[in-house]
Amino acid sequence: MEDYKFLFKVVLVGNAGVGKTCLVRRFTQGLFPPGQGATIGVDFMIKTVEVEGEKIKLQIWDTAGQERFRSITQSYYRSAHALILVYDISCQPTFDCLPDWLREIQEYANSKVLKILVGNKTDRDDREIPTQIGEEFAKQHDMYFLETSAKEAENVERLFYEIAAELIEQARSKEPISQHSRSTADSIGLSSLGSKANYLSQSGCCSSLSSHST
Picture 1 (spheres, rainbow, N blue to C red):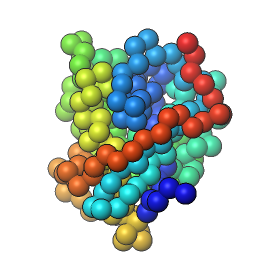
Picture 2 (picture 1 turned 90 degrees about the horizontal axis):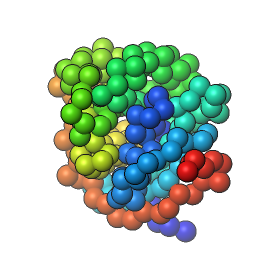
Picture 3 (picture 1 turned 90 degrees about the vertical axis):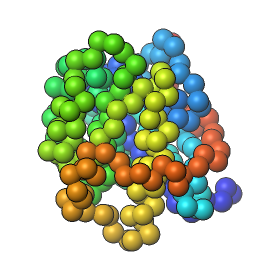
């Protein structure tokens, strides 16, 4: 049996086409899949990182954004330790749908789940949602905030490493850290814990529950 200290479940949600699968694959496999099709149902991959000398296994669940799969994906919220809500910075409708996703999170997830808002596709030159707007939305809804590019690998490792670092800190304290008590700066960005987390190993896709379209 693999030796690891903690196992954390991280779930990505958001509209179809925002790049959830590409973020997961960039982090777990180090690649950007060109022409990635829509996720069918739910998929997951595993990667192990090291945080302050402890091996942490991240079970990362990639959920479909289409409405027809919503009843399937909602069941994965309940046991999540962290929820990453993703939108496309070049597509206003994906940002406009964030309140709907937050309502689902509020209804189905643990009230103390770690929530991260991610604006993806910063490599694009047709940005529609300014960074400040994303920051303000995250602050308003008590979420961390980060912008990423799965294509350019910008902030992808930082995103998952710092989630791991935050979750292990919570686990060690035996109670979730109140995000309400954080400063304004922390409420709109992950704390600088990335340097404490180091990549160790990865495995391929482990799910037989779903597949990707070709």
